[in-house]
Each structure stands twice: as structure tokens, then as C-alpha cells.
Image (cartoon, rainbow, N blue to C red; front, side):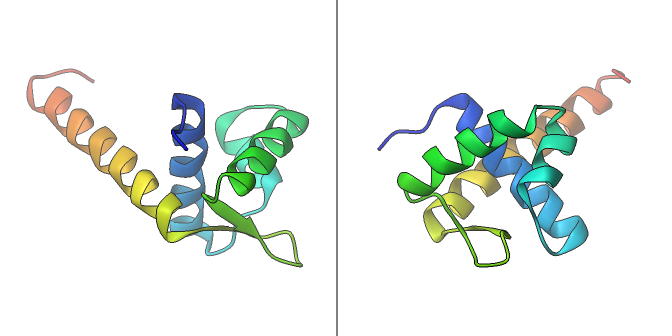
Amino acid sequence: MAIHKSGEDYLEAILIIKNKKGKVKSTDVASFLNYSRPSVCNAVDLLQKDGFLIMDDRKHLELTPKGLIIAKKMYDRHCFLTDLLKNIGVD
């Protein structure tokens, strides 16, 4: 199933938080993206159903291999664009 832009944003956020904290919960994603917890819970449910992430018995979010590929792609793209903009003088 295809993923929407918002789904890509969630997956990238989960990757970034996991790299910083080691563990990710829905509340971490809500804080990071400045979204409401119900919105994040709804998105997490959809991403789980589509096979992009799983939630363990402690409510930690883990990217599946399929989700990790998309998250890394989005993160790499954002890093590339950030570096490009910095190189041309944009703050």
C-alpha cells in the first residue's frame, strides 16, 4: 500500500526520536511533531495496519524493515536539502 506524506512524516519522526532516545512512544511522537495524542494514535494504528511499524507490549514503537526504508529515505532527503540551503547561505 502507498504511504501518504503525513505517514512519511510520522515514520521519519520515529526514526529521529529512536536515534536520540533509543525508545519511542506515541507521546514522544506527539511532542516532537506538536500534534495531538489522539491524532498520533490514529496514525500509528494506520501505519501498523499497513505494515510500516509495530507496537510492542510496552507501547514502544518500532519501524518494520518496510517502515525503516521510508523513514531513512525521508531523513536523508531532509538532511540533503538542509545542507544545500545552508551552503547557499540560508539560515
